[in-house]
Length: 415
Ligand SMILES: Cc1cc2nc3c(=O)[nH]c(=O)nc-3n(C[C@H](O)[C@H](O)[C@H](O)COP(=O)(O)O)c2cc1C
Image 1 (cartoon, rainbow, N blue to C red):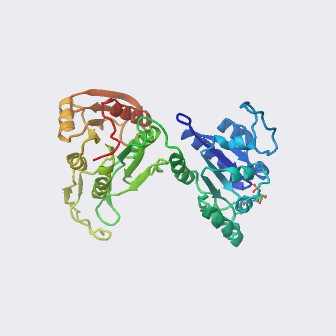
Image 2 (image 1 turned 60 degrees about the vertical axis):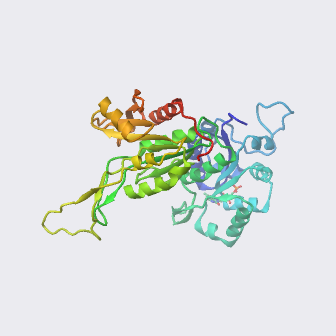
Image 3 (image 1 turned 30 degrees about the vertical axis):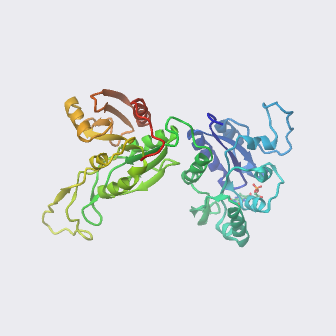
């Protein structure tokens, strides 16, 4: 069904963790996934139904015995099977020990369990319970049965539990649930868009060059620009691979994340991934220098000076540009202290990129660790365009739209 947004049926069961399902609904809606909640009767004391209805825009369904509508009448309350028609996946979060047992046994004694017996789409569960319940042989056996049937278990976290004890059994964080669910959804029905199925490789964040075992040369890049580009590419249907230096950001759900630390690690990761990606966007702030001989262990204070001997790091972008094949498109980022047009054009041509995105680092209100940016786009033919100051999400979308408007057509396969 092209054009229809992704949709899930969210089962909520009788666990204290049910309040977290509200955050899950908001985050899913934010990712463009429509949510229909079906709650068990025992979930209701734990679950703010009205808030969930406002967040999801749909009534929370609980009752198996709703009137069945005559054929052709789509409005109003629907029969239980109709709830499944729109769902690309079913996620039960939180999944109580009791509900997992009923799923494993194939019971159909309420709306959610009945729907699950009819479901032909992927099914995921996020168990939430006390550690003793989780580890009980009966619970373990039920989860094993479900896994063998193809149900994806998103294992719980360890930490403080509702009982006041600490242990395994907290429902997986919303970030972790999305990291598992969104790729499953996108595989079920790849999002349509101008970059549908196109491999987009993005470098992001800072690099860290060790001085000794604990100290490093870094920079203030937050990784937000790369993160925004990854999300914008995913929203346009791309298959996104993100190679990121150390950042505090969770990976955009649905992308293939490769974490690196040094410039040379980044060079190696990008070098092996580049041949299979038609579009490369180099948004990382890569250190130009590294310590010639990092000190083994931690350097002790000795009352004297510590003179650092630095050597140049490889120019990753230039190296990749030299290996560019027909059909590949390269976007380079440049951090400049002045946006002199002649210098920018020279840089664009020297680096052999198809689009240069120049940041003015003399401004503290935009760029590196700011949520906003203002950039100048430069093409090798001498085209200049400034994208006025805006949120990095908006800037990322405009950069991708500029790539798509450049005349480049993503190849169906790379030679
Ligand atoms: C305060 C309270 C908290 C509970 N928390 C959990 C829980 O986190 N996980 C769980 O499996 N059961 C929990 N239970 C027990 C379930 O609510 C109970 O097994 C219920 O039958 C589950 O029904 P359902 O699976 O139909 O939703 C809790 C019960 C109470 C009273």
